[in-house]
Structure formats: structure tokens, C-alpha cells
Amino acid sequence: MIALLALAMTASMDSQMNHSSEAERLTDKIISTFYDRKDKIWKPQKASSESVGMQGYTLWTSLLAWQAMIEGAKVNPEKWKPKLGEFYDVLEQYYSKDEHAYAAWLNFPGMDDFYYDDNVWAVIACMEAYEITGEQRYKARALDIFDHFVVKGWDDSNAPGGMRWGTKLGYEDRADRTVSATAGAALANLLLAKFDDPAERRAWSKRALDWINSKVRADSGLIYDGFKAPGFERMPTIWTYNTGVPIRASVEYYRQTGNKKYLNWAKKMGDASIDRSLSPMFDGAVSDHENRYWYDSTFFVHYLVDGLRELSLVTKDDRYTKESRREALYIYKYIKDSDGLYFRSMRLWQIDEKRLKLFHQLTGESDRKLSPDSSERSYEPSEMEKPVGERETVKTLLANAGTARMFWLLSH
Image (cartoon, rainbow, N blue to C red; front, top):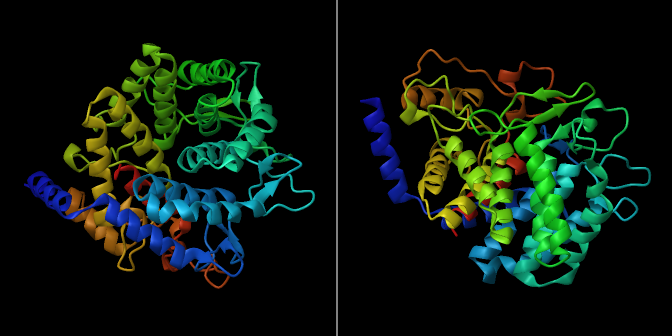
């Protein structure tokens, strides 16, 4: 009975929801809520896990807001294409000409904290903006970052190989070899290959993709997180984006080369991503498969939606986007709050008591207790001494930018 009710609810939601209108509304809401036009920086409403106090948001968060607008410009170019330049300029505060890269936080003399995954996302965003606008500065920036910074993060030793996560000395995790950086770099260089030195760039991307396929692929076909420094043990977590970005990159490699090996690999990853009985990306604690949803966060899920969308386009197989639409409907129905903004986690039992009750109603798993996630809560100094569950919930730019980008992707 619960499963039938859930299916009826999903059908009803599907008839009520319009991805493009929700993407439009949410992107407007993001700007009005989080953008400080005076200081030309994205700022939180309250200090949170992804902000530097009340000063502003970190690079990845600010970049993702721009990526949401880039997707908006593909759907509604009349409105969003003219805005791309203004919000690209916001990112200049993070850019180091000396390092040829974006810093994790606002750049200053002596800044040494740069992430390779942040910067490959920047290359991808710049190339997508270039394809939309034809503005040479976007392509120039992408080339500058990749050819003078990103390539320095590649480990040719194959022990373990792959891309480093970051640069900051004294922080052991920056030497991790991560799929986020490696897959992102493969995709970034393939987007550059459409306009510059295609043979060499495709060969480089092939090496990165082959490393992922040989080193961090689970038996299911999904992709592990990478290798943990200094001993380089494999990190066992499987996030949605660790499979989503390799799917999109392998599809792009197939498009450019015609090599079906990479399309077949993408399909294997895609099939595993939508298998609710197999994939650990679904909440396995929910016994009813019809009520299992991706066990992740809104700022990661859009990467998998992106990869699955590209896979559907090239295979003409709608199963991948059907699952993406199902997950989007779940986010729209349950993760959206009364203020029109979205929380971070897809795990309802980590947000608040209201969402815990919704989780019980949806799944019938009434034994699950609230396990509040600190990243959903305020980091204001006055709140930090309280138990996590008593701290005020907050909405963040990262969560809402990721959600907006997801809805835009499903609007194409």
C-alpha cells in the first residue's frame, strides 16, 4: 500500500512540476538571497559550513552559482546570457595570475590554498560559457588554468597516479588522489580539445579515464572516491558525482573519437547508478526499493544528473533521465522549505523533525531517529556551543546552486 501511494504521489508531482520554471524561480531567488551587489560577492544569510564567517562563500560555492546560470543561459539565453559576464567577474577576486588558478578563498599575496578539482570545474564552466557566448576571455582563462596549473597535479607514477586534490602544504589530504579532480580534468581537457590541440588533449583525457576505470572502479561499475594520502589506501565512499562526472567524460570521449569502449563503460556506470537494488548511492536502509532515493547531497547530485542526461542523449535510452527526474521530484517535494530554498542533504532524517516525519510517511521506516547534520545548521558563534540538534537550520548557496543547476539540466 505504501509503495502504491508513493507511486501515485510521484505521478501527481510529475504532472505539477515544471523543471524550467522551478530553475528560473530558484536562480532568481539565489541572487536575491545570497548576492551582495555592493561588495560583488556571494554571502551567506548566516555563517555556515561552506562560508568564511559572514565575509562570503568559498570558490566552489561561488563557481557553482555561476554554473547554474550557464545552464540557464542554454535554456533561456535572452535572460541569462547577458548575466554571465557579471557573475564571472565575481570570481576574479579568487584568481591568482601567478598561480594561473583560482584560490579556495579570496586571493591574497602568499595564498597557497588551491584545489585541482575546483579549477577543473572552472575550466569546464569557462568552456561552456565560451560555447554559449563566443567571448574569447572564457576560453583564454580555461587554457591558462589547464595548461599552467591543472597539468601540474597529474601523477605519472601510477603509484597511485591520478590527480592530486590540492596544493596546500602541511595538509595531508591535499595529496589525496581524487576522482573529482581526475574525472573533472578529463572532461575539461576534452572540452578544450574541441577548439585546441585535439589529438594531444584527447590522449591526456584517455589516460585520466583509463586510470579511473582501472584503479577506482567497484565491481558494481560505480566509482570509488580515490586514494588517501600518505599511504594511498583506497577511499571506499561512493558519491554520486564520482560516477556522474566519469559518465559525462567518457560519453564526451566517445563523441569525439567514436571509441565504443568508452560508451559501453559509460552505460555500465549509468546502469549501476539507477539500480536501486544494487547501488550504494541509494539509501539501502529503506527496505522498499520504490522508496529508495540517492543517499547524497544536492550539491553532488547535479553532477550525476548531468552525466546521465548526456548518456541518454547519446544512447536514446530514457531510463537514465527518468531516474534523474524521479530524484528531482523527490528533492522538489521533500527538500524544499517554506521559504522557497532547499536544504543540502537528501537524507530527510538528517535535517529536522519535520523532514523525519516525512521520511517515516514516505518509507514506512518508523524506527529511524533524527540524526542532525551539523552542515545543515548555523555556524554563528552564538550557536556553536549548543548541541547540533538545537542549532538553527540554515540554507546555503551551495545546496541551492546545485539544485538550480539540476533543474536547468532537466529543462533542456
